Image (cartoon, helix red, strand yellow):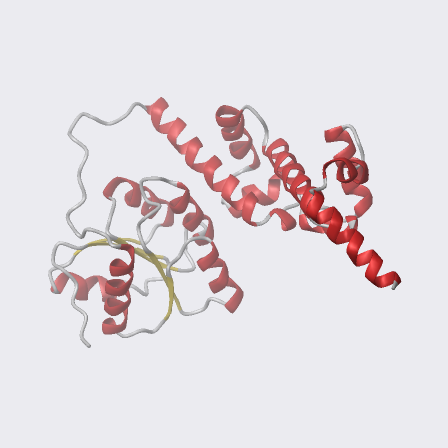
Length: 276
């Protein structure tokens, strides 16, 4: 089966290593509208401004962090639904898994034939149910103010950080780790959280950990050591201390008072059967 791309399709190619030039020329020859950049930061800005139908992201990037870009694209309402296909000649299996986790719909190993890339684009556009019309452009003079732009950027960054925390709660030790994975400075991340949520990233991380711990304590019989690991603490002792400071009681007491009756009965039944 031969896949053809509609002439009104707009493809943004963010080419980190110069591997996508051939696709750029081929698509343009076939009448497809393309935008090419070799700069990761500029590519992210163009994705927001142009709203392309599909993004081809060549990794690794020379400027910028590709995994961070994927997270930011998914956190931005303007670009969250745009299919992003990652192309690379050197991603390790774990890096490919990370790309999927952070929002890529496909990973293509280079070198790849033009027909294969076209086929994958067509398939993912079909799965996404996207209308391949030209993106709407901002009216001249209707650009938002710098303050509004700054606030929007903060919202996007905080949204990306919150998504990352929820998906990686067990493996994030501190604010610096979150900032590093989103390719921003600690200070930039802290300022965005304070503006948008009136709290620091560390306070948000602690809140998410405690809320996840509450659910696990109420609904599962997990031992404290295993539960602590699930919410990102290196030891049960550290978890108990943090939980007591946050709730005013140790987790064992909280579990006794809050555990769902069904989970409590299940734990009791298990104990009875083991004694038998």
